[in-house]
Image 1 (cartoon, rainbow, N blue to C red):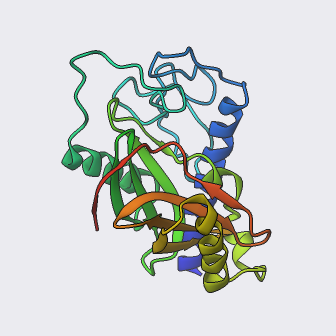
Image 2 (image 1 turned 30 degrees about the vertical axis):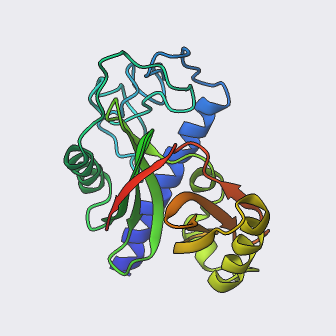
Length: 235
């Protein structure tokens, strides 16, 4: 019962966070182009941060923590940088991710940290390795936020675990490989992780070149187009 309650709290909180983020993406909290930050008061704070309330199951969202806090960091708006801009060090990205998890989902783990030109990517899993969600760290602002796409739209949380999926991991992998035959000839699936309602796969030819997800119920493919070129991985 204790384990179930922990998983329920973490996933419901992540789902709530994703819904708030999605509302902003649909125009509810629009952000200025090229600003690097952007959500106003209400869901996210003035500088794109979270308030003191937990986004993984807490009672709501307060004003932001400021530029260095957790929140949207300019993704989706393109590459507008200062000439002397330098990316966040990987160790700092790890620390921010761990702080995020420690605060909002004690007991969960950060896994599969990957560096891309636009952001750092990580999976949040429970102690048994079951996927709870996917998180990004903006590589230049350091903002921590839930990954868009499947993580927000397909993650069913605890309710999804009780519903038999149309496609299990192996079937989803086959769908992904069939898609890659046309999308990137010669590419193969290199790593995989199951989440509630979908699966995420790393793919590439000689090495990792990208990431996609497969819906466990419809078989739809969602290519993660927001990362930029792959730079490296820290297991």
